[in-house]
Each structure stands twice: as structure tokens, then as C-alpha cells.
Length: 210
Image 1 (cartoon, one colour):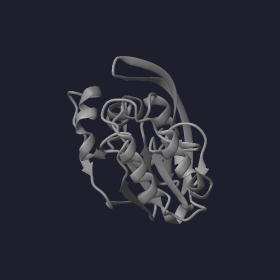
Image 2 (spheres, one colour):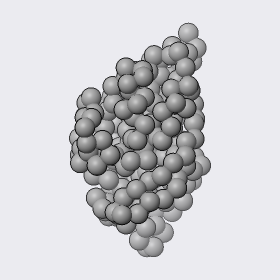
Image 3 (cartoon, helix red, strand yellow):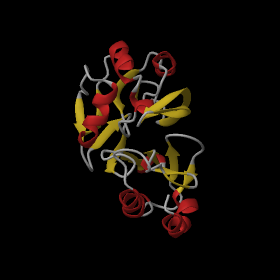
């Protein structure tokens, strides 16, 4: 049996909300081994994600939040692989904006545990970017997958519908920056960082307001 690992795929497409559309590159994270994996954020390109999974069993598609750029490909990946789709219950409305005729297969809650390839990932409810935004903490891999809650350089955007800056600050302060400083932060867009690199800047983010 091979050791569990994190694989990284970047997909490109658009993000639409509040009447605007933006071109974006998204990080898709694949966690598991040579036998089974989960996909974190099925963004944009179902064919590329299915190809990256290969002949391994896809145990779940886990959505860090309900914005369309993170979930657009989820139903197609699920249809091809048979994997269930999970999202936090508080992002049901955002999910329906993109997929009105297809429900998720289950809803996530805070501290739920997801196991793949003998690795346990814990769901951390980290609202603010969206009401149901989550992060996934995998201590055995020394990493946390933060979606659009925490990036290299600060919090995710909170200037759109369903978002709230004081809430995302609380989520980052109370749920993410309390993790070990060496924890690798694998984000929804852009470069990875560490908890230790970001923690000293919290007050700066609060002062600037974003």
C-alpha cells in the first residue's frame, strides 16, 4: 500500500455572482493513495479531474463552499465516477444557484470526519466568505485545505452577497490560526502558505478591513 498524499490540479474558468463574471484559476486538491481518493473542490473541468483520479476509487467530492467556480464540475464528476457530493448545509442556497436540479448527496457539519486511505480529515466550519464555508484539517499530512477562507496574504473576499468580514476574521482567528504554525495552508486559488506565515498579520487584515 502506498502512502497517502496530496495531489494538485489547477483548472480555469469563470466565477459569477451578483451580476459580475470573472476569469479565475482554481486549485483542485486530490487526497489519497493509489487505491482511493477524495476530490476537494471539483472546479470547472470535469474531464481533467476524472483523468487525474484515474482508475482509483473516488470516495467523495467535498466542496469547501458553494460558489460556482468551486462546484461547477461536481455533478459531472459524480456522474462519471459514482462518487457522492458533500457540502455544508449552510451553503444549500448557493449550491442551488448553480445546480437547481441536482441536490448534493449529503451535508457536512462542523467536526465531521472524512477518512480516505487511512487519513482522517476534520471538517472545520469557517464561515465568512460564504455561510457554509469549510476548511478540512488533515493533521497526518500536516495540512489544512481552506478553500476561499484563508489565502497567502489574507482572508477571502467578503464584498459579495452572503459574505461577512467580521465572521471570516473570527473563523480564521479561532479555527485556523490556532493550528500548528508549520501546518501547510492549501488554498482555493493561488499559492499555498503556512499558518505560521499568516498568523502575525491578522491585526493588519482587521485594520485594512479585507
